[in-house]
Amino acid sequence: MAYVNGRYMPMRNAVVHVEDRGYQFGDGVYEVCEVRGGELIDRRRHLARLKRSLDELRIRMPMSEAALGVVLREVVARNRIGYGTVYMQVTRGVARRDHAFPTTEVPPSLVVTGRVLNRARNETLAAKGVAVVSVPDDRWGRVDIKTIGLLPNVLARQTAIEKGAREAWLIAKDGTVTEGASSNAWIVTPAGSIVTHPADHTILSGITRAVLFEAIKGQGLTIEERPFTLNEAYAAREAFLTSASQIVVPVVTIDGRTVGDGKPGPIATGLRREFHRFAERG
Ligand code: PLP
Image (tube, rainbow, N blue to C red; front, side, top):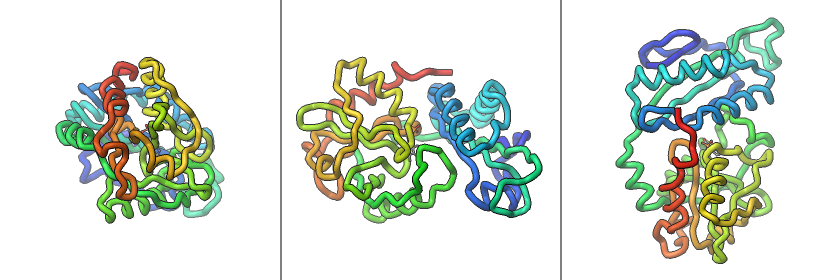
């Protein structure tokens, strides 16, 4: 079941107008929230980031955060999601195709869908660790806004899959790793400090990333928020990626080179285990 502009309907009937600006221009934003034990994880932070993305693009919130919370919970319930994700997308709405914003007020479009994920499969993946490959970061200059315009991310992920990897790490012109195609990127240096890119305009400031900062401090570990090079990543003791749908996943190879001893490291594994003690539920 999906929610589409005010109505709950079966997925097969869940369609949007051909002149929706999301479809025509990618003129919209989205969020993905983890569901665990049937509860939304970090809803407050995800909705705050949704509001920020919309503000940056001058699209209004389609409804209050409280009302949107009700819709999200309804989609979770109607799809009987114990463990999975909810996806929400807001676009500038339906208007005759023209690049400039509609001149008369149109309501933003809101779509919410839910997905059940296989928990055992995700745990197995995390226990084994994943491969990543590096791909040039050729995205636009405002990837801090979570827009639905994801073509470079799509192409990067496809390259990764075709090379037998799970994720692409995006490399800026100066040789530093910005983030993954749909995740944030982290390494643990040989000296044991945890490094991730600063949350500036060149990455999406992950909610999982923000919560993990608290978990890292809670464990008395050191964080360095700075860009790191691909060469530093090759030589790292551990590497991992974070996102709301995967939480913390150890990276065991980068471009086919083994990271550390080639097994998920204790820091990534420990942070994955501890994460939900620091996340908000409900
Ligand atoms: N970076 C990009 C490009 C993403 O698409 C995502 C999530 O989809 C993330 C980072 C991780 O963000 P979050 O932890 O909020 O899911």
